[in-house]
Image 1 (cartoon, rainbow, N blue to C red):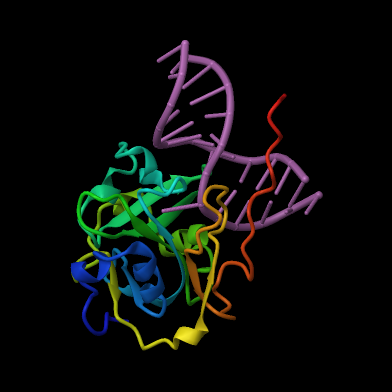
Image 2 (image 1 turned 90 degrees about the horizontal axis):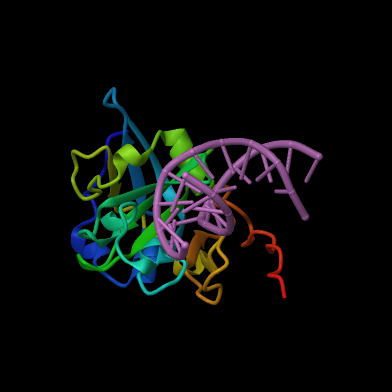
Length: 194
DNA sequence: GGGCCGATTGTT
DNA sequence: ACAATCGGCCCG
């Protein structure tokens, strides 16, 4: 399916990251494959990460891996995690500020969860730096149908131990492509010796 | 170079 | 609750 409507612009992404994360719920993600065909689906789950947040890769400044986070808003930040999976983000806030929105779920088969989405849609580190606002990119995001604010749930972010007080996860309530019905964090690690 | 740990997922 | 699996990052 060809992209409908206009791609979301840099101005859309150059805002407070949790607001961008919330407003991306219902938007349409497109993946142009090498043969020119498109995959597409409605974004149903996101998380916000800000530079001043210890759970954000940018918290300790621009490293080789995360330097793209400090680039202009609307770029893709893709990283490899747990030796198996990739995760797809959109860079937010003005250039020079290291923030992004993690795309955790898209409507469709095998696209519930950030690792499964990238596996299913063949999104890898090769897409790091791709511009979501450029219609010729292999990845783009367009405005979707309006979403009733009451249908958007909010919670702590999944899979992190830092900054659990931040309610920066957004999801479409009851949607089957939301990664988990409730936040779940890794089991507690061994207590430090004392 | 060593060692620890992770924005996950699937199995026990 | 835990294993798989390996790159990033900090330290020395």
